[in-house]
Image (cartoon, rainbow, N blue to C red; front, side, top):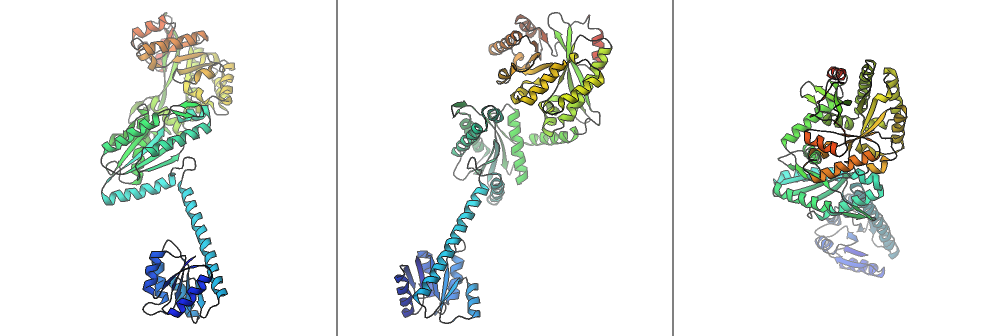
Length: 568
């Protein structure tokens, strides 16, 4: 043990030094308080022994100054004194001392005091080490080793304050992996975790020494770039991240590709508080996803306005049903050769008092995110079934009435029972109905989904897969599901006559549907060349604005009445 001893008596200093040497300790002698303080700083001893009474600076004063020098590191201090009373003990403790050794002392007493200080020092060291480890654990993401959300929030606050003091730019990036859930669901959480660890390593490799990288949950990461020169410099970092994360990952024999979407907010131009800059980066990230993913976007005022509008819509959507703002339109499905009306798809619309007619592409997504899709979906099923029953009783029987249903609806335990109760109550033949699920729904294929679909099919309801061809996992589940109809996604049809690849895809989807004895319907038909392409390749059913716009129930009733002679 390295022990600093301060005593202005050469005799006393020699005696205690000899005793310490005999106990195999290294001694650093000091003849006064000033020397003791200097040597404490230079030598960094493990223990300090100070004579209370010294000329120039007392042991108490010296202890106080030593304690001021070692705020974060506790070094034991023992006072050496000829007599010890209560007032001296109190003064020594207040000065920062830990124990007293009275003169004259025995070697046994000296050894015992030192061992006691060693034990206390060791306990403090272990406590400090444990505290440090707990601090690391509390601020670290266990899976990736990056900082966690708690540390992110703390660091962002500190770095914003620093950027404000020193007048420099700070950029916050929200990074979200594209389609990570698909990888997790199809290959398992273990592979997903390994992918996240690799993403974390690649992110760190893109950063400067002082940049901050954190995983705040799931497949969400954040980066804080401090003291950046310009938004152009931020763009370069974002491009570097996109390129790095887009490279293939080889994980346990799986060759994976996972792109990312990045939202960026810059302090102070795009947010001056922690809340606004986080919100800005989050909004920009969702905008990047909406633009097709695998890109980065900066937050703008226009995006902020859109976000605020969305928040308002989310709130008002909760009351849209009770305010009777939702209604149904019906878009006909025709035979492309005979021009016969064979069915119709029920389409929900929202008549908003401020924004006018809102497409389901907007409000259905909001309804799914907020959970209101369950009440809205139940209302739509009841509304369409009631109208179908009216048309059937009026003699319009030979057609299919399609209703879109969401995955959240189907996965309700009582979905089939509630749907059956509606069908029985309004007395609509199940054979008149067709329930449409998006192809993305099949990715969540499980026993509950299969059971609900089978029960509907056994009751007589047809099942249609919408947006067919947009997801790779459909074919693995298609054989197990009682599917009657597939609808080819309109994006494939858009350039089918001029884009060779689209043409090949559409021909393949038509052939697949026909070989499986399914009805094949093409969506989004806009011109005659598409119709001729579809007929030539064996698809005879279609819908789209070229054939007909969506109609109100009154308009649809009139169309049904004239459908024997109806031509398009």
